[in-house]
Image 1 (cartoon, rainbow, N blue to C red):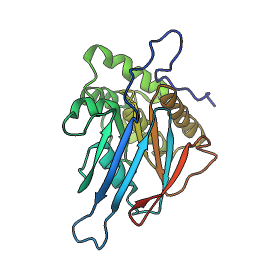
Image 2: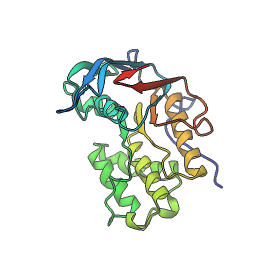
Image 3: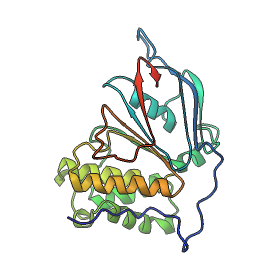
Length: 239
């Protein structure tokens, strides 16, 4: 098995330090959300703050609101109440700069163009992610190495196994080297090698002054041993 690697930028003597961002890196205050027809709010006055280097695990049963919270933190949907800031930026007022800092991996197995190869999917995403043109090839090559996709780069996405597709989705998610990584059931379908590669990227993100939210119905401590905080989402509250 190939050793787990992560090619995200790491603070060392050969590289400049990461750009300083005001603490906390993530600040969500008073987040509430109720879907039409719902008897109770999905999220009820939820607070979450995170500093650079933190890994926070959020557990809760299916339907507890974990994905809704991540989508709000990502800026994909707006809360009914409360505010979200990442690096002092707001999802709408500072949209482009905000999304350069954040990446979200949703649960499920979607998001790939099945008739495109792995490399073509990554090349397309590098354009959508607004990576400068001169940096795109290097970003794609780094993402392929990060999740050990070299042998699959020329294969179409519909020829891949579920676990291989998950690696590609993770490569897409980390293509622009985000500072805030929001993961929803990220280990689904991954074998031991895939989990090791994912954890290596999580650790590299933390070392690069980023932070990570790892959501799942339950957390396997063998997969994710270095959690700074473990929170539970239940009845709309985060505790």
